[in-house]
Amino acid sequence: MGSLRTAGTAQRLALPESSSTYLLQELKMIWDEVGQEENERERILEELEQECQEVYRRKVNSANMLRIQLHQSLAESEAEFTNLLLSLGERSFPGRPEKMNGTLKEQLNSITPALQEMQMKKEARLKQFTEVQTEVQIIASEIAGRSENEVVTVNEDDLSLKKLEEHQSELQRLKREKGDRLCKVEEYKVLICNFAKIMGMDPSNVLASVHPSLLIGANEQQKKNISDDILNKLNTMVQQLKEEKNHRLEKLHSLGKALTNLWNILDTTMEERQPYGQINIFSLTSANGMLGPGSLRLEKIQQIESEVHRLDQLKASKMKELFIKKKAEIEEICKISHMDVPYQTEMDNIMELIMSGDVDHDNLLKTMDGYIYKTKEEATSRKEIMDKVEKWITSCDEERWLEEYSRDERRYSVSRGAHRHLKRAERARIIANKIPGLVELLIEKTEIWEHGRKKIFYYDELPLLEMLKQYMLTLKEKEEERCRQRVSSYCSIGVTGSCLIWLITVLTFH
Image 1 (spheres, rainbow, N blue to C red):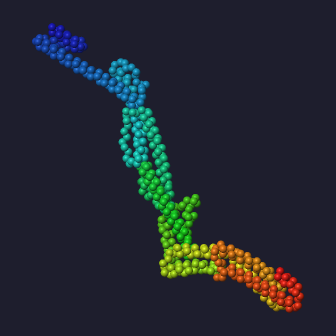
Image 2 (image 1 turned 90 degrees about the horizontal axis):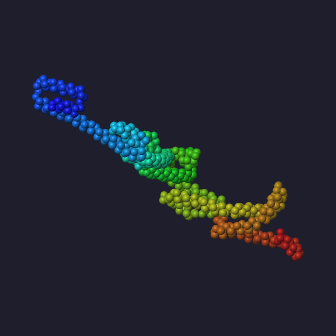
Image 3 (image 1 turned 180 degrees about the vertical axis):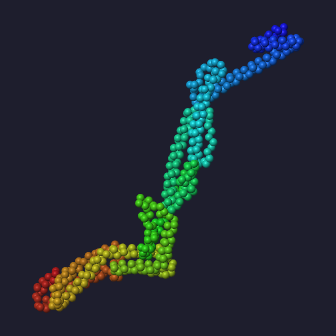
């Protein structure tokens, strides 16, 4: 029975027949030699059989675990492959076998290359997503004005090309917006630099006050800030500088005008004007018509302002002299035009104010300039009449000489140069004959002037119209007297009545 059990046990152990049989035989020989009891032999053989079963069981379990692991790996690989297809947005992969045949290892080996290729494809796609989303995040931070970037998180469940294109489209949109904002920033920077240079400011300090990243030559690694806040600040700065520039320019023009007026009033020499000769707006501008650098520098404006203040004080000290000079100018105009000096009472009051010191110098000069303007205007309106008055006066002088010549004609005829006196008498007679027409024209012009201005035309404090009418009356009386004298002279030599009437008629028409 032991041999059968031994043979059966040896068969179950599935040992190689040569080795197991040899070992059993050797064990039997040992037992026979030792004299091992049968029961002990049975027990040992049973133990040997159990140990063999345990070994087989462990091997089977190990093989089963390997099978389970292979099934799990295959399932995980297929699931991962499917997930990769879904995340990459692809329906199939050409490298994946359509049917899974063969052993588990063969099936796993057949899907592994395709899976590895899909994993590499995912990593490449993930890198693309990371790069695009990182760039989007950087530009978005610049536009939002954030100093630090947020951590980029890529949704690995959706790595499809469609999603990638959406991110790329967003990136392109942000790049365009960034480009537009950068252009706007550069425009603002150019304006700020131009305004700053014109006003003698340091453009770097002005830009730094808005944001350090705006400085020319700033660190290239420094993130640019192109947020709405920066653009608003830049726009505000441009408006402030523009207003300041206009304010300074307006002030400079006002100071220049005031300085020029003071120069003219005080008769300032060219040497004294030379240091301030460039305040003229045409001198401030460059060849292209733009304001030159430093032309609106605050120090320059303050310097000119100080000079205006100094000259203004000097003008105040010379106000009496200036007033007398302007009053003399009015009197000279009136003297030339034989006018009464106007505004005499007003000018006396101004003199009293100057002496008391209680006067606004600028208004005083404006008032005097107004008086001068009105005096010149009236003198201009009188010019045509005055020219004819001068001609009338000259004609009257010729008339008086002619009367003297007529009274003492014999003395002139025997004197040296008698022919010249005769020629002058002929010329004086022609001029004298034109006097009545000239006076009548003067009367007409004077009446029109007085009617238009509703005032009397005075000539050296005498009403011209009365003078002219009185002259015409005197002229008429002289003519009548001459006629009577002629009649008397003819009567004294016995002229008949008819002849007398004829002579009177001839003389009257003559």
